[in-house]
Length: 473
Image (cartoon, rainbow, N blue to C red):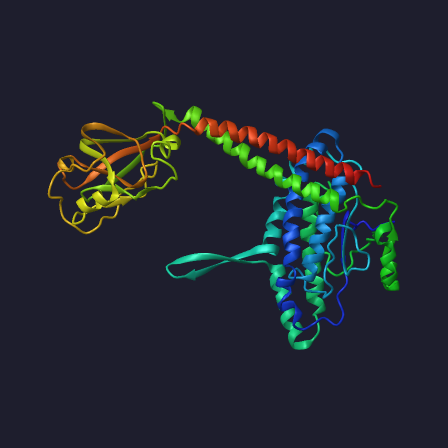
């Protein structure tokens, strides 16, 4: 009978013999191919976990084929971590496979759950796991503060990585991997993997707040699938005593199903971006229009200088001005209001800079809902003439209260200027900016349709991959 200490997620490892003193210094380069593949595998893991969430919610079961894939991703990640900076405890290069490799020094197994709680799936991966997430954060990425230049910055380095590097340094000088650090690292990694499996909905058993250090778990046995059973011949007698043949059939996750799953997951994530963009564009088109213009929130700006000028608005669209950018932006409207008579104008940036060359003015990044109180000003004096007397303005408006200009943009560099009508200092006003954006609704509809098609293609590929993997038993 298994020990009461046994947890359904079992992580075991054997410390490598004759470890190289120096190889660990370049393992970060050697594992780059694994990191590349794992990036796609974890993307698929995330997509499949979403599917699993609903499967458990409605059926109480974890689909077996998906379970085998997700356990394989954890197993692959554990082998890479063990070889690299999760432990640095073997020099044997990790195999590129989701399957269990019985004679590899780092192994992982998760007991398949025949039944899972439908209610627990709603809260265990976020609410119940919060205490463990805090601990995992310390193990994987502890933080401290560093002072650099004129401000403080946060640096990050996990306790697991730190201990692995310490073990590597000791290995350089002594030629031996310190066993106490090995035992501690196995306990830390085991804790992280248990939490990952629990958050991945693979078990309802809450991860114990217990550090099971050392290469072997108390009371645990590791099974050997038929695919890996032949490799167990190279294990030592002591190690064979810790494994038992598994009754399950070989996994169906071969290159074909895995490729279909990864491609489908990538397309599904792409569709999510398209659908989100389409939804936001449709929301803006239907709710954020004011008088036909998609309008920004109102910004409050003030300065002690004589003018507030936007940063240069660069428009460089390929095509005739009457098509682009007019077809994209349509007309642009700038509205400003003040308690005193105010001037609002738009002109070529070169003309604005020439007019304000010796004038004290402030620069605002934009008028799109970004408040700017006490804006810093350039050195300079008062303008020689009032702004409305200049002839270079493309559009302008002067008066008391709310002033609005409507401008048809074209290629070039443009600036919007707000000044007091009498060219005095101390400019304070509220402003917003809007554009017709006639293409917004067609873009929204196109993104929604395109995202829907991509989602269907992604689902088809994912379902096909799972189906093919399920057929091999």
